[in-house]
Length: 141
Image (cartoon, rainbow, N blue to C red; front, side, top):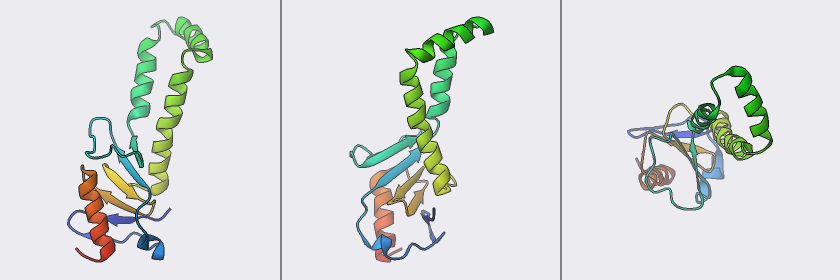
C-alpha cells in the first residue's frame, strides 16, 4: 500500500495517490505504543493501535501460568477452552494493528495515517498532525 509521508520539517513523497487526497479525511489511524499515548484521539472515528499490546497480553498470560511445564500445559489447555477466550480475542485485535502497520510499511512510531494514504511521523498530538496533513494537502509548507 502506498503512503505519502509527511515529516515535521519537510514533506517527502513516498508514492503519489492522485486525486484521492483531494477529499476530506474520513479515516484516521494512530500507531504508537502503550507508553507513548497520542493526545486528542478521543474521537470515535480515530482508530488507535498500540503495537506493543501483543507482547503485553502475552506477558499477562505467561504470568498466570504455573512454573512447572507439564502443569502449565494442562492449565493452558483448560484455560484456552474457557477463561482465555477474552485474551485470545484481545490478541487477535492487537495483531490487527501490527499487521496494518506492516501493510502500510510504517518506518517509525508514532505514526498517524490519514485515509490510508498519508502518514505523519513523530507527532504526539492528533490536532497538530491533522494540521500538518491539511497544510500539506493545501500545498502550504
